Amino acid sequence: MGIFSRFSDIINSNINSLLDKAEDPEKMVRLIIQEMEDTLVEVRSSSAKTIAEKKDLQRLINRLQGEVTDWQAKAELALSKEREDLARSALIERQKSAEKAELVSADIANLDEHISKLQSEVSQLQEKLADAKARQKAMLMRQSTVTSRLEVKKTLDSNRINDAMYKFERYEQKIDSLEAQVESYDLGKKTLKDEFAELAAQDKIDNELAALKAKVNQQDKDA
Image (tube, rainbow, N blue to C red; front, side, top):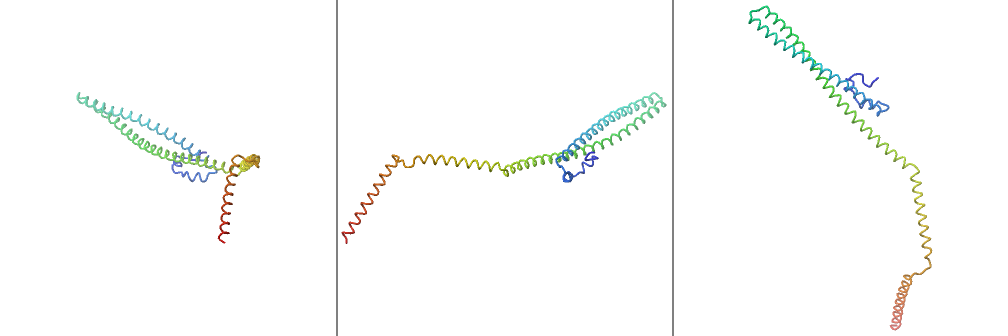
């Protein structure tokens, strides 16, 4: 059994309400779209048949109007030949054709009204279908976004990142240890640069000592 039982059910339906009540909104919107598309095919098929029927009636009315014109000409011909009896018969046939043409014209008017309603229904159905497809697209986008976020959350909450960080820290500690070993080999060893630095420091001390001696000697003299 379909979601909709009649065309009017689709036109008057509230898609939001249907989706709110559905246990599986994604599945429901697919079913709605499928039924709308099937109904649209049926309505268009009905429209095509109605239009074809109108064309047939239009050809019939053209033929009947031709008969009216033909019988009119025959009636005039009969009168010109003083055959009033034939003229009367021709006018009777003309009247019959004219009455048939009027009936067919009424049928065509009814078909025009029916075609107009079908066109309106197709337009409404297309709007509903476009709305349903837009909602389906939005739902799929939301589902994709939520799925991606969920995967990120799972990754963040798992121990994989903690394990990776722990391994990274251990690796850094190993590098620190290796660097310390390299530096330990240089302990106690003087480089040329170190020796010149010591000489410079010694000169500075000697200068400061000389200055201090001079200051003390001057103080003794003043005393």
